[in-house]
Length: 112
Length: 113
Image (cartoon, rainbow over the protein chains, first blue to last red):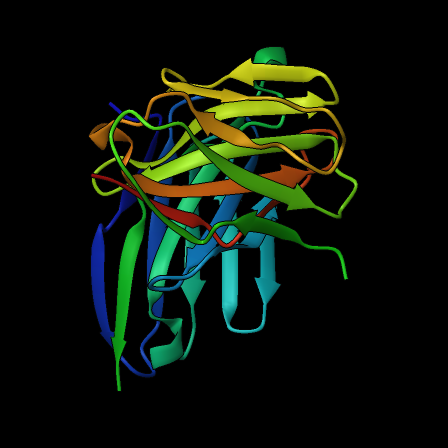
């Protein structure tokens, strides 16, 4: 079993829909990251969380440390949001310093 | 603006050849990482470095090596390229500590024939 599990693996939406991507992890963590990768493109960091909730524009990320769960929400989705969204965690503990463990990614397609 | 670059962006090589992928960052970050990305496996850590002269093996380090002679560069060498090393390679860097974002390079697509 992977230490970081994302669901769903594939997600198709119509423009304007509210989207939720989930991430569950099984280890203690120092931080959780949400990353975005457009087709054929590089990887950019959207959020880094250690508690609570963060918002950037139409994107909202939440984390529940007790339940080892995080969600990424996209409000009023747009075709340009089509990308792979990757959840990653920095496990707590000295040997894991700064390193990331990644989920498999969620492929999001938003149709006009 | 600070950035992280990789070269080449695309490379085709033959089995058995030595290949070096370059990674250069101007963030002045101590921490640098090499990952490979494959369908069905996601991103996996190859090697990482916490500073000059420091290198460490990740989960898929067999057949790869790195060296860190300065803060800016962490080249990744495939000693004898194998078809199983066909992949997209990403370099990343981050500040010290667990609460810093990682900044990723644009990636290098390597094909071993």
